[in-house]
Image (cartoon, rainbow, N blue to C red):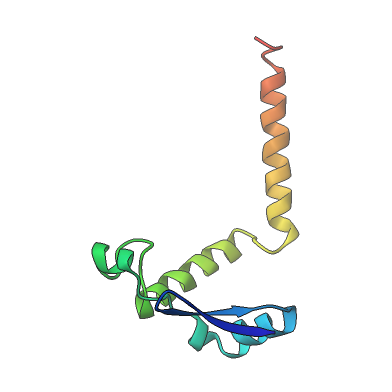
Length: 99
């Protein structure tokens, strides 16, 4: 369920199988919550926008997950909101009768 290989001079680890991925990201989250140091990150500078790493990236991820949870992601609440908005949008489009 785990393969390691080198892509150029960088070590890449490939996980497959639900149990392996769950164990990696749930039980060993600290080991998998960082991003690799790449040329792009070095060129743009650390901790800028979406190209962040380390504790800054973890803090941004935590805030993002909390916002998504408050919006109802992962529950039927989000689905209900989307369905309601789509229904209203379709009703508004019908008012124009194809013009």
